[in-house]
Length: 608
Picture 1 (tube, rainbow, N blue to C red):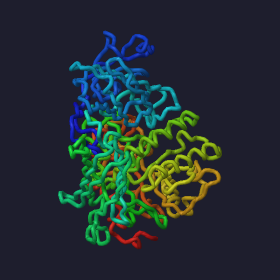
Picture 2: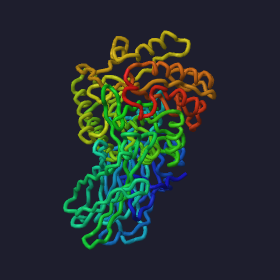
Picture 3: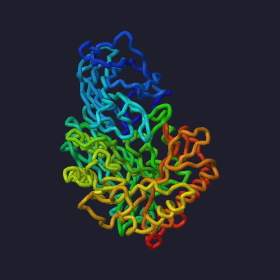
Picture 4: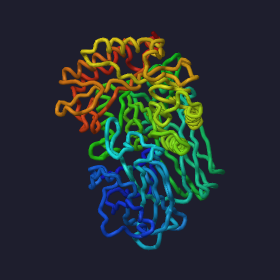
């Protein structure tokens, strides 16, 4: 099992790169002796092997050990010599949970903190003239530290209830590339649907100044626009018209060239850096979608048209890889199965997913609510770490058209005093405004589930539908969701919808967690909010619960719990091995509500 695909699909460099996934030397360091023993120069004789990027707890790693080891070491040879003059060697990590120290030939080249964020070190100066270099990584993930962002990873040392097996160390791809000093460093692509243009903010290296940047945009192989700009500073901004006075390219009559779940149109864009003498020094290929996310009259809009959210909660776990997908095809398969079951997107739960997943969401037309991993406990350290995580996440994933919502907090995790503590409320609102300061093109929630402070959308969680014999519970569930006024009535809620001092401001309301019907005929110990006993009973229970949502006069979408079974949870619409629990066409009939159809319906069709 190997992950060999290009790991950064939105910034594909036309150059020399190599995947560093595969077999590495590996060792536990429970007593933290590695630094003093200089393991950066060679692991101890009793080391084993691991299959990167799978963590040691995962079967796909080749180790499959779920016991607690907070400090681990990795080592492998690099087949690279010191680059030529005017070139740099860049070492990229998709993600390492949670602290990482990286050494090349025994020399520390960088330290990184953050379990979900990508990072890069320039290792040029640590390379020698030899054909082989030694790369060493020390990773530390403090299992019992509740101030670290953990998401669904357990902090008790074992999986239980809704918490899963930990992931320690490297869990996303590692790769190496040699680049020219004169190059494109990053690019920020901002679609402007209303003015039918794309905003381009490019960051260039110092060595590129004085040269030129050529930009070419195409749609389905047809050149749309081309521009060349003289590089006079590290930062350059351009806006390019995409429609060019052609009405059928817009979404006025149909989807045109815009990005929607039904028609996920993507533009290709290529950046070429040219030296003063015209020599090409860098080429980067990317893509973007022309789309707009907004809210109006208590509804969520995509491309200025109402968009009813039919989402599924996606934990992003696999039996063989835990947080790491076994193959790139696994990302694609999950999206295809979800769409076949009737969902038009997902809430990727408590996890910043691999960019390859977002690539397939962009390409296949799949809405994504993205959230970072929460910390269990509020503290000064957790405040710093959450802020850092959001800055890293928004900057990395800004260009993906599939992402339409950022979700900073979930069910008051890590902000447990939010209802009454003004300090915690300030934290919640600060993160809300921080994310909007980084990205004003998407919607931002604050605390999904309950105890909202500010927020563009109100997300509520309700699993109180009961089983088929509990008619009173079901009727209460249905009645509670029927109108805005009843949803906002706190008399029967375990948690208030709003933190103390905050009130409803007309935002769209989404039932962002519900369902969770457990069904697995092969086991009786699996966990779910309610249980089904057969395929027919499962479909009947889905119909019963979803009928209550269809009857609601105020909900502007839902997120069903959940896509797949995970460990002890058996409440997925798919098994852990991605087998549908009922025919996909039957699931589709239930999850797609007749009155909430395509985006091309008029707004009047959605107003009640």
